[in-house]
Length: 282
Image (cartoon, rainbow, N blue to C red; front, top):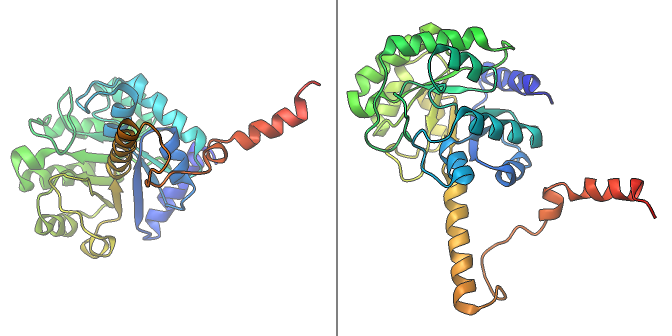
């Protein structure tokens, strides 16, 4: 499917009331694994993409080119619709226009932005974010593209301010609202009651928000749940354990960790081998 076709599929699923459960992907391997598993959408995590690409924290250090390049690569190897973290839009209104034409979830933090479950985040005036959303909605090349608007106001300014911003972002034309880092199940329930547009819940590992099963999120009024940290946190720990075994034993023989046994097929080598059979010279 083309990128626009994938966007239409995701919009149609939301319109039909289908709950969107999206694992966090961050590189080509994670994208290919998740793409085969039948999820309704995948989520390109800014934290994971920055960590895997630069080996650095999600603190506004990845550029527009870094992130849109990663999004383009991921889109090229998957058929599943993708929700992509575009940070703050990488600057002013012209930057937002350019960003949307690449891919999009935007947030109301000041630059440089930080991961939504870390301290010290500051937000721009709500009116500035409203303008960004209006520019984003107008700049998309295909109306099927969904604009996800995130507010990080909860941590520094309280839930009332976060909800005030969320309602403004609804009115400005955002398609999906993302109130970052609510701190209790009661807060999640309140967000679900007070926001009309489709709602995204961030079920991040070791974060501020309680991780709640899908059935309760649906009951409370949420439409999308992302799990951005699950993949890379499990992968990092598995690598640590595997390499600790190698270091202590001097071999990988006997390691008890599960391993992906069809890597060649996963990465598309069968197409390479078919091409070679057809075109290789004697």
